[in-house]
Length: 300
Image (cartoon, rainbow, N blue to C red; front, side, top):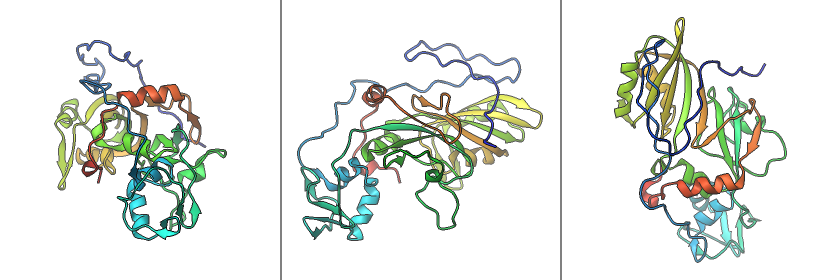
């Protein structure tokens, strides 16, 4: 059976740009509603990205959906990419377009318009193209008919919920960069005791075994006997971040669901289903993103 959706209060989201209201404690749990993250950058919005003139081949290939920039740089090191039959040796090569470029001997098609899909990743599959151990991947769970797509970020093997997919490597990078501050929201069911005061301390960030995690807005949603449901919002999304932080607080996470990524949520998707984001909605969202920093600020 597919996993059942968690039940519990999930009130309506406030309209974007609405005035802030005082955080009042819930009479049942003593929890306060989460502080809203800013819906977009302050100050002057960034201009459109440069799409004409010479550009680095790594960017062009990522834009065409071949792979991420870092993966393309590794492919160049492995001598898998050529231009007019000559193997390239540096990702700093500047090109106007991809004419004459081959990957593993195959011509690269020109980039299509950027598209974005919402995918409800079921628990029990990897966010990867393949697995040497033979475990199922997201590509085994996706419906047929999709073009070549890449996941935006990752969800752990047993984590379920919203995973964004795109055909555009530059959009993927833009959504993943911490500098763009896209908010990821989760719901976690955990065994153990924790207070709202402990969760409030996560707003200042926390260091665990030498790893520094940034601000997390956490709210104790409700308790069910020995378990509790916790809502969390963060903008970094380091590897296993939510699980590590909650385990550090003495909790044992038994279910973890990502419910939204930026303005995109699961809506009425069931596990394994896909729904495409309308292009107008995607365009409006990209206009609100903070300008990505230089290449030196890429997520490690």
